[in-house]
Image (cartoon, rainbow, N blue to C red; front, side):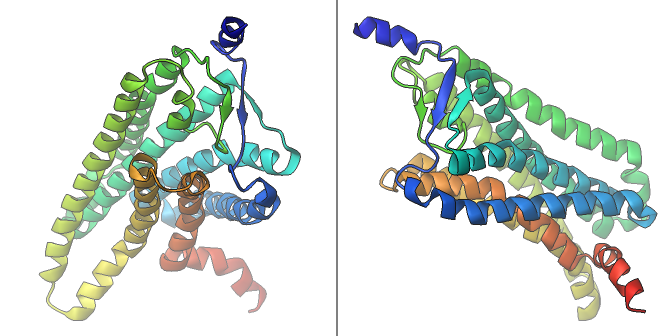
Length: 315
């Protein structure tokens, strides 16, 4: 009898997502801030895309990279929130095995792409401040397209083994995932086989991508700060540094939740499971919500274009 039950889970047709274990009674209340963050992320990022597309003065490298960032934010948040809300609101917990792996792939690959785009934005700021006379000739439209394509291909290729490694594992324990989405480690932990290859590859990619990208960002800003401190007046230094403010805030909003989620997942063995799940969701929801707000509030050209319909109305 046990053999039969075991074979039923070897190739599960569906997984069951529990939502946030231990907080099932509060799912409706938890859905309110999550739905609010997602709505702000959708409206904010589509607004950024619309403004950049319709305003010819914003057709430049920094704003093209900003559009790429908005697209990755939209894909990442949309990969988890609709299914999560269906769990919270309609108890629709089943997810097809292939759909689960697809969701996993989109989350991981677009997270890697987002990290790469932050590096590209740091490079844009470096050239604009340290070598402004060559900015227009260095970051041409074809070069921006090549950088964006390379970041996309990096995310696609590095993450591609994840779903294939997860698919080949036998799942003979259970098909219940104690999470709101198909998070990689939460899925492979259900396997009744050695998951060291999948686990070590996931850890290696996460460390490689994050360490490499943070290194390049740090090098760029080291050179930027050196250039800023060489400026003759305090006003010039503050004005120049202000052009990097939005990007720095976006970097902090992206990496801090991701780092916190990663550390609690890997090393926080005494941390309650529901806290792990909440942090994993915040890491995918907070940056997409904050990024358009940060750029809308701090970037004068976007702010002027955003407020233009209202200023015309009252003049």
